[in-house]
Image (cartoon, rainbow, N blue to C red):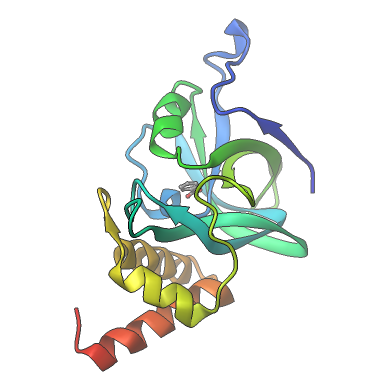
Length: 193
Ligand code: BEZ
């Protein structure tokens, strides 16, 4: 894997300002864009795995009751499947605001599902950031997600939409789908939602 850390506020050279760039989404960006893009293509990045280890104080939870959302953690041999969007750099201004709460932009190698390659920006929240929650069992994560809710809506919706989108794209993500199953079992037992 090859990647470069960029502060979210860094600006490109003026000449680069209109050059389209690839943005790789592995969480809510797979199913919810809300920004203008030129095209999108299924793709993956290598050496990273998706984990619900990042707390959410401002989207899917609150400071008092944080939710849990996806971030990437390094893992040898891992492949993280998602969606790549071709965007103009100005789109990042909106996303930097939307994806604050511990996320940085990283440049990494991008592998399209059709075999082509490029480079992409990806947002990730690294261990130790202000909202980091870290590892927990699928059941513990599901319990936390089942009750958390923030300005962007219930945390369960984020999880279920991501799990369904990955399935629709033909990907089995053991971590995400184990949490989904644990959440659905909790809700069945409780007779909710
Ligand atoms: C993503 O889908 O790639 C993403 C969404 C929110 C924060 C960081 C990344």
